[in-house]
Length: 88
Image 1 (tube, one colour):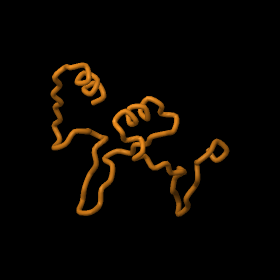
Image 2 (cartoon, one colour):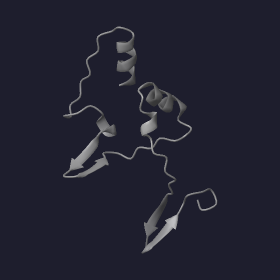
Image 3 (tube, one colour):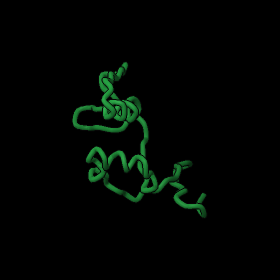
């Protein structure tokens, strides 16, 4: 989609094709009543300079909510953190 944006900015006529009802592929969201969730886990990191620059260009960077997250796994009735190198 970024390529389509760049081509359109350059004066080219662009048509995007998508088999699903909406553009986005795995970046699109599922909706069930009032609940909306990502089709696939996506994350934007502070280090994602190119993506952040594109979002800024589109006037969307202010829409990002930075949240500290952790990761881990659940097995045998216990949650094990893997949020830093030491825990890993």
